[in-house]
Length: 113
Image: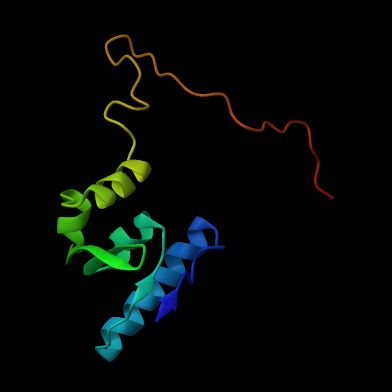
């Protein structure tokens, strides 16, 4: 049972940890239950997905089925929360213009040490 094992890790470390989990699981011929709220991780590591809401199963299927074609409204809302809406970040392709949001924080002229 892996309960949120990569939550506090940076993306690079998270990828390495996920690779290690997958390797050990495959090598040992084992199964693992991976509990997380991070759907991007689920899509990378899971063979099957069970979606729970209020302790009850809402949906079960292969990772590909659940991610690409969620059948339950709650699952669709979860997927919508992590997928950008169609056309997001593309800007006006005809003019080559891309719209960007302002950064939340900008740091300049800082020296380390």
